[in-house]
Length: 355
Image 1 (cartoon, rainbow, N blue to C red):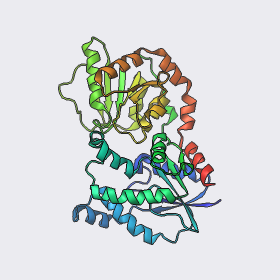
Image 2: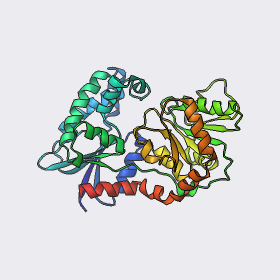
Image 3: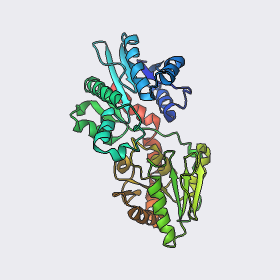
Image 4: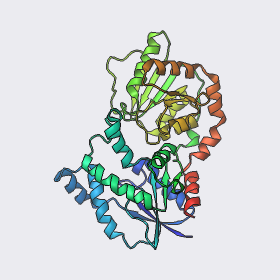
């Protein structure tokens, strides 16, 4: 079996780093390669020094450590799989990178869409570090053997910037849903589910405003909110249920109970939560941007918000709650969701490219 060097930041818990993405992909690729992982997490004392004494944020620390690692790992040969631009191609090495976003796109938001940038989760990062890293990342991406993007939107973004289309492959992402947890309950056509820790970025406030409009119109609709550590809503109207942070095995109860999933995110690099909802049989409401139009077949498995308008979103909610066709279409695609968005399927797509 051919060796694949796997450069990864395992963090403090190997199985939960990047919501389990790193470890799940590592296991799935092990079916095709002898995967040799190298942990890039670095010295915890050094990280603490850079953070507490020098005041560096996470992105700045990563940038600094990456330069140290390039020298340490420069003699690695063969095929290399990585999640950031640590190593580049040479005569004895082919490098591949798996990404859900790029520095160039974040910089675009910073300069052209400050309204989105302010809720992007990158708004507190040192801008000078971002500018330096954008140049380095662009140079690497234009010369590596292959770029694997999670989403179609990111591939399109890179091509629009002149990156070689024949070296950019959309391979998707996988979920870790235990299908044994899927047990849909009788539907009541009035329950909406929102799942997201970052309530503002995920469109939580516009979701609540749309829900409130339906309540004021006399609809007996209910909204269940999972993810934030504390309720972001004061003076709540009836029908609002704040669940908070709970393990996924408990989240499954609400996926099975609710009728519609709603997450009109302002910024969403990928959004596997939509696949989780679809796998549980829930029609989805998302925003008409990023990967959401690829997850949601508009008018068939869900609906898309085109303007930042609570009235429009309230109308979409009502349509989705009342539509038996949407639910039936989602249910008919269950097996496809389970297979297409599995880590085994992602690894198979990657292996076809690396060889």
